[in-house]
Amino acid sequence: MRRLVLSTVATWLVAIAAMAGSPAPVHVMIVNDDGIAAPGIEALARAVAADPAYRVTVVAPVQQQSGVGHALVIRRSIEVAPHAPVAGCTAWAVDATPATTARVGLATILKDDPPALVVSGINRGENVGTVIWYSGTVGAAREAALLGYPAVAVSLALDWGDPHPDFAAAARWIKPVIDAVREGGLPPRTVLNVNVPKDPAAARGYRLVRMSLVPDADSSYEVIRREGARRWLSGHWVPGVETSPDADVAALAAGWVTMTPLGLDQTAYRSFPGLEKLMNLKPSAAAGQPVTSP
Image (cartoon, rainbow, N blue to C red; front, side, top):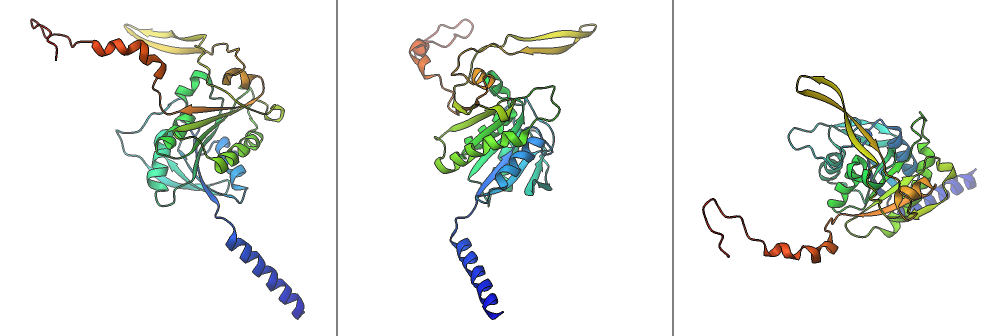
């Protein structure tokens, strides 16, 4: 009996020593644009938190915020409240847009416990091509990157007739990307935009691709009601057809998990030569006054 007790104590001591020598878990903040109750954020938090190498805090909008892009809340107060754990992780609900939620999480909630990485998603629906400009999911990741944090936006393409998208399967493709970013980081001022195809189980692998700039096939509005001079409009949108295999839209449709690095610097440097003549412009004269050179 004494030998069994000593053996048990020794096992405990070895375990404690191993724990003391192991690195601290990497803190990850998870945000989204579908709201804190969305199944995508729960699946992502569960997949990351299941790995003891990570510690997860969820900071998400109170409600669905798709399509708001990088909008910020600046003209009203913002309510922040503790939320029931999401996949067992500490969670906070923020009554704001995704980008504002990311900023509140980093600048206030986690000010004294900053994350090493920010992940936004899993979004319900793909964010590829020009849709990226309107994405709240990407907006939240972009805000984190603007504040100096490595940031990844993750989305699942949908068959919109499927009421139960397999976010857990999508998370199994996303988790290795998070691991790679944790280990190797991201280039400065870069957001990594990741999209998983409609059937994650049949995905062909990973592809590093560019953002498609194919214009929409239809982006119009129909008048559905009139009252005098007042009109009510309904929008119509059909994406353009992208055939280039090195673009995110086509690669995702072909079954690849796409990864697109998005830069924060939007300067069109190649346009400088053609625009240099603008530096010779003169200001308009006030009425009745000649233009004089400086």
